[in-house]
Amino acid sequence: MRVLVTGGAGFVGQHLVARLARAGWEVVATDRELDVADGAALAEALRRLAPAAVVHLAAQSSVALSWREPALTYRVNYLGALSLLEGARRHAPGARLLIVGSADVYGSSAPGAPPFREDSPLRPASPYAVSKAAADLLAACYQRRGLDVVRVRAFNHTGPGQRADFALASFARQLVEMELGRREPVLRVGNLDSVRDYLDVEDVVEAYLRLLDRAAPAGPYNVASGRGEPLRGHLEALLARTRVRPRIEVDPARLRPRDGSVGDPTRLRRATGWSPRVEPSQTLERLLASLRAELSAAP
Image 1 (tube, rainbow, N blue to C red):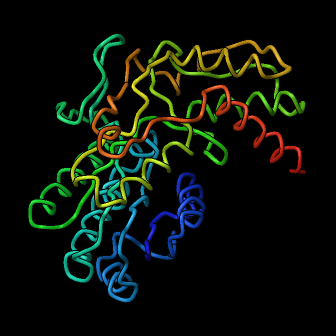
Image 2: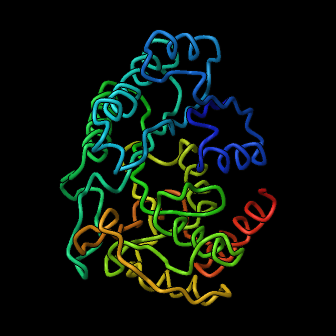
């Protein structure tokens, strides 16, 4: 069957496109050449392709940029979702739609609080999170009007290809640059006491693949491990796998209040049988290995 992946050249998109192809899907991936906020262009793509499924990954995904460019964030994340849902209503009403959102829609909790469930209140705390919460609620409206919509709330994930404006990818890139002698041995970090629920990107795309199966009911799903760990623990695990011992400095630009974000994956597990397969140690080793290969080859 044919699946359209928007944002297919992004971090998760590249991994998902490869996984879908291995599973036998006919994949059509678009990226910046298709403006998802252009309703007419997206509707025409849906009419022409007639996909059996759509995975909507295209997004402005930086919280920091959302504070600088809130209008851009709203345009891409909310109007993009609106364009997709309305285009599907008109031209692909039978398609399964995965609207990929973010755990940021829940806001944050105090470390030690119970994991967020799908019925937890939405309390977005940034323009990025607001745009994702609005898209999530809009998707629920279209589901009630008959579309087959899955609303994905993805918690933190990392792996090869992630940009350095995300915490673990930033730590890993800085450490590899130190190994190569391209950076002074000073590691700049934010609040290392904040608790996060991390998955490997390969486990995330496996969850998305399973949610394309219509045996999984429509509605919201957390994609999470259910386990939280302070960022300090992830950093210590990275340091144990490198040859440098930098001085650690808090960068005011990265600093946020201590908080927590952990998700309950029970609904996803019951609906699809999914569970994380990649050990956290493997995730960090693959992240470092990919950066060593990339930066060693760079002039």
